[in-house]
Image (tube, rainbow, N blue to C red; front, side):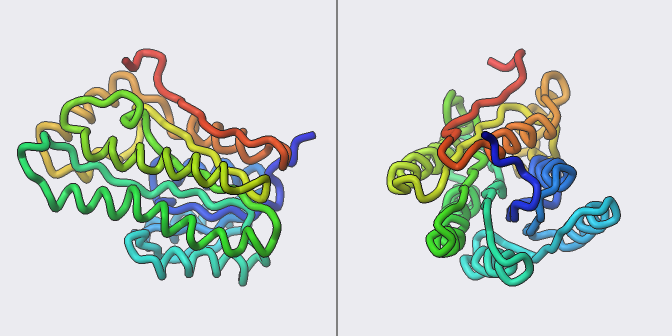
Length: 246
C-alpha cells in the first residue's frame, strides 16, 4: 500500500526556479508541507505566496548550500515549524561548462561546492532528524550528464557521478532506516543554462533545450512517484529525459 504524499514534510533546496519550483508546486498540490530553500529570497517569497494563496502549507529560508550552516538551518526549520522532516530533496545545482584545458578552476570549484558538497551538507542536515524519527527519504537530483560523458562536461559530470556514488552508499548503509532516490534529468525547460559563463556553450545548450527539452513538471512527477511508495519500497534510480535526447 502506498504512503501517499499528503502531510509529508518536504525540504527542497534550489526551490526558487526550474525543477525545484516545479517540485514544490506539485507536492504542495498533493498535500505536502513544504520547507523551501534557495539563494534568491525574492523568488522564494513569491513561490511561497503562490503556494500559500492556493491553500498550501509552506515556510522558507534563504539557503546557500555552499554553507553547511544554511542547510542545517533549513532542516531545523522543518522540525520547528512542522515537527519533523520526512523528505530532503537536494536539488540546488550549477553548471559551468568548458574544456578541461581552459583551466576554469573557479568554475570547477563552484560546481564542486554546490553540486557535490551542497548535497553532502543536505544529507548531513537531514540524517540526524531521520535517525531520531526512525524514517526519512533523501532525494538527490543528479543528471544524465553523469551517464553519458561529453566534451566540456567533464567536471560537471564528475560532480554528478560523485552524488550518484554517495547516494548508493547511503542507501546501502541505511539498513532500512531511510530511503534514498537519485533522479537523473536530461534536457529540461528551466533557466539552468542561464548562469553559464561561456556564452557560446550557454547559447548552444539553450538552443538544444528549446528543441527537445521536457517540462520541469515531468521531473516533479518522478519525485512524487518515489515519495509516495511504501516505506519498504526504495526507488533507487530514475533516469528521465526527452525521447529525442541522445
